[in-house]
Length: 275
Ligand code: SF4
Ligand SMILES: [Zn+2]
Image (cartoon, rainbow, N blue to C red; front, side):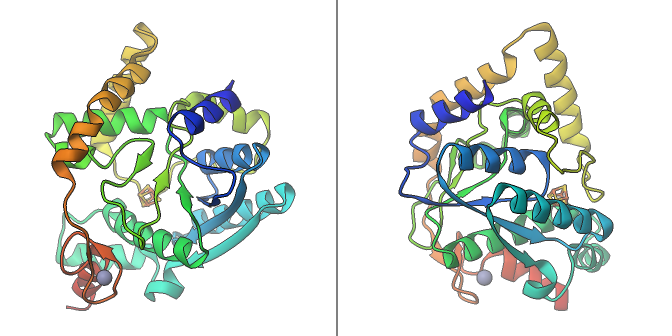
């Protein structure tokens, strides 16, 4: 069932071709491990990229798990770390930035730095596509959160293939688990006894997302298909959102990476760290 959903999603949205070199952003968690396994078994040319965030025992365990998983499944694994790339762990960067701005959240810092690193490393690995483990629940939650907060421009960056603007330095990010629910992913991962942590990241602060998650789960229980219907309705309007919000893409004046402004968010963040 889950295999068919992934296969159909890839075909319907033309996410990958058999010639593509695919890099999976592997966190050591259930979603990315499941997608890695499925793509390998569907015959795609996959490798894994693990980013060590440096979140104490949590990152250590994820690192051990992904090494074990890739060895067993015979998947090539590349490892990079925040410490090597930025000089510090995520926790350290978050703590310093929090002293300067109390509203700074670990997930904001993590998202900016991870996106930057993922794109840069995947490009160095000559990837045609970056795969992330986002599932149906993640997408339905993001759509609703953006809707409730009137963040329409942010929604334009959602969808099974991410990225409003096409650019040779920007590797397209795709979500083959787009129509697979969180529950299905968990069941599959448990059935296969994948070595993954089912605990949440200790840095996560997501009061608002939790609220939307509970609300959606409640609706889904009473009206089966709610999550999928939200995503399907969204996909209907996505082309017009993208048309409206596709801005120009520049290259960061400091690091040369793709950026919507003159200087990219990663460089702005790193500058604040030293100010
Ligand atoms: S929960 Fe937040 S800090 Fe933890 S890995 Fe995800 S984005 Fe990063
Ligand atoms: Zn930059």
